[in-house]
Image (cartoon, rainbow, N blue to C red; front, side, top):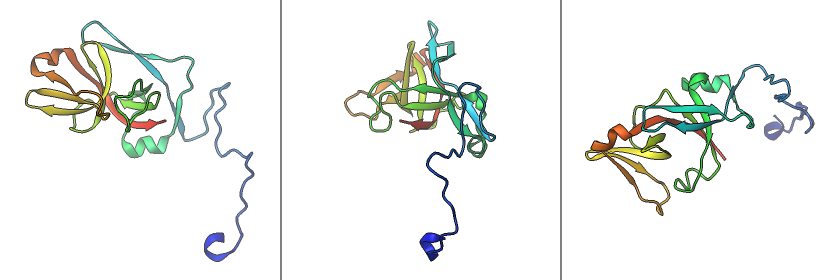
Length: 166
């Protein structure tokens, strides 16, 4: 109203005022917010299992429940994790935080997924190809990894990236 009409009818809270707070000692969240824990991924020998281990010393990511509902996400299917490395620059940077939806493992060409290939964890753009699957780095200094049709038993999608923060 002030910008459009020059009428100052809104009091702005002081800088010290909190709109929503998270008390890390009591772990109480304001109403309408949920926690998504940060995880490490331990990969088993072979590809059958990926074990998500909560990073006990890291603060969770706090999201509005409305954002989750609008996007159709279930909190129990979302895992926060850190990006390591530079292969996805300029999309993802080293130590960015990403949220992976472990329920969304159906490949959509051009989307970014966390994947296990030959017992290594990757976060890459994925594209299908007649020869198999391409794990594509956005940083042109890194080669595309080809998962041949014969190696599909060594490959597992862990989930689709649905959010990033850095």
